Length: 447
Image 1 (spheres, rainbow, N blue to C red):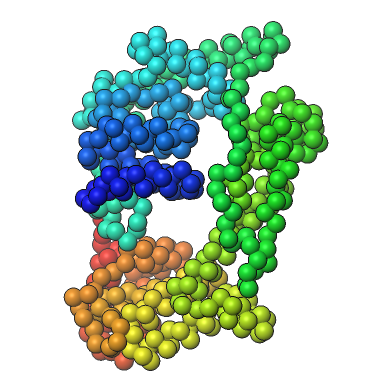
Image 2: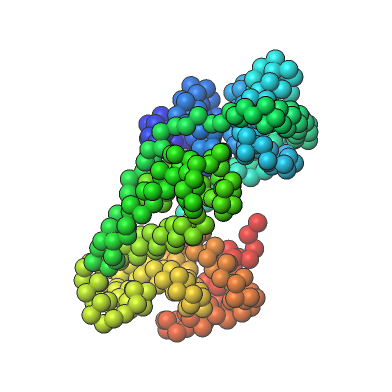
């Protein structure tokens, strides 16, 4: 998107965003698209990006987004200012969340009075007076941090910008407070968000279907909650609500707490009880686990049906069965001198141990992965090629994190590294110490 067929890449990401509404993906892709607009100075791309957005909540209004609008001569809308309220010191979200329609209307009026436009112009804020912050524009952690992260002036943290925005939001808040009082006194309904069709936004994940390893999960169990949301009914008592909560609220008749969330199955809006929400969280975690198991088996070239047969016939826990099966894979790779594949299986074992909570074992495997990475392992030979030596940033991050959890000093980490390498290979002390120095530099002496 930055150096190849940029327009095709830009179009593909826009297309993916229409289907994949994962919050993390939406955030990272938003940053990448905005960065590309600035990099190529394509106002038309930015306009297409904005047109593709159904709701401002799909956009991450952060330093790079505001910088892009500044550089392209655009201002911030009332909805965008509402989204960054907390970043400028605004703390009373009562009306932003509960009466968002009225708040946006009043904020637009304030903008018109102040700037003769329904946007706040950004040209008044000097970039050199804005603090510089680091902004992630690429989510792939295998890419060097210096390429994934850029330094950008943060207009949001500019003192004049923060003061001006806070003043605008507080003025709108006071006006909404008066209006809401008047609406209630007169018995009139307070304007609400127009209902949009509560249609599915994603396909049902295969992880919920029956497989040789897992039973099917009922994907229709929250269908009634879609109707509760559509009709504005309390999921506890079934009575009509006077006002449908935006995210969280209480039934005005039974007094129970109601949660509004997106369905883990279809992405539709749901009105949930607290127990139903906890149930959905469990289902979401189960989906993550099932997809992780499937990924591990695929990465190791293990047939799911055969794995399920062995696991079920021996009444093994899935994680224990994974350790046993992947360990056999690793041993075969080692015997066949496929050291690159062996290194990958060690990495997989580390992931499994970490998920099982066996952090010491996980750390041992990650340290061995670094050893083989520093030696420059390849497949088909036990000879090493130092020119291929390269440490994986993700593995370094896992080691760093586990070291903190286990409260290991650098000296203790060194002892652990030396012990696992000596147990793994017959190798002279010079090589162990030499590779440790490189690993130590990467772990402890980076910026």
